Image (cartoon, rainbow, N blue to C red):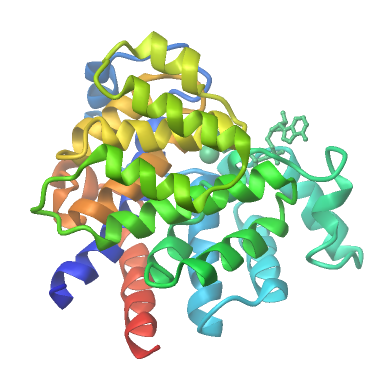
Length: 310
Ligand code: R7I
Ligand code: MG
Ligand code: MG
């Protein structure tokens, strides 16, 4: 693949996370939202401000760049430092509690197990995974390992880890595809199915295929979910992408319009779509207004450079 195209995919996935997150941020917890309302709110904002999803994605990228790969202790410390600077980003209840445990001396890979009887299956580790998906797009074994281990910091439940790995692998597959080539959704789902072994996700992938030619949003929410649990949101993001694969704008507007965990499903859809179509597919009207865009692009550039050197 052409180097500039590949680089644009790295940028697209990280900026796509931020834009999807920011577009959904105002509607988190809503029932359903009309795409026109989402556009109108974005238009009225001077800055598209992101939430914890992008804040933690930035922490993930910062740590991967700094260590030229995964270092659990360092990534946990980076999350904690970022949280301490900006605790108002809308974090879920789990991470701040885990950060306190680590600060009190608990190991980075043990603290999360103390919550929710064996760890959280919230979508918090999948929402921030884009840097892992792009950096390891060429190595699915490493991608799985780093997705699981980075999830372990805050989401040690099997379903939380598997959700993060599924989202990372969807991003990696999207990076591999030529943006101009036609995407075969069934082929894409088959590849995800080969990668994912957990029955809960296998069943969701089968439902995505069944829903592909339908546009009934209520049905999509009923079958795939729009909640804060990884298994009720990662498959929904994959569906939002696959059912609107030619347009970043349509994919993300659809994702947010489903209601529920809008910022997170928007962020994850944006991460996959941006990884497929590249950063230029993100409408200027949104991209240029994204909070901290230059810094996010700088991180994507650095991940691209470190990937090239490997
Ligand atoms: O997953 P997490 O970081 O939250 C992310 C969400 C995103 O929507 C962000 O935009 C932000 O708004 O928060 O936070 P966690 O506390 O790990 O998990 C979120 C929720 O998932 C919890 O509050 C629980 O309701 C639920 N949950 C569980 N419930 C029962 N049993 C997660 N794991 C369990 C569980 O094992
Ligand atoms: Mg959020
Ligand atoms: Mg959310």
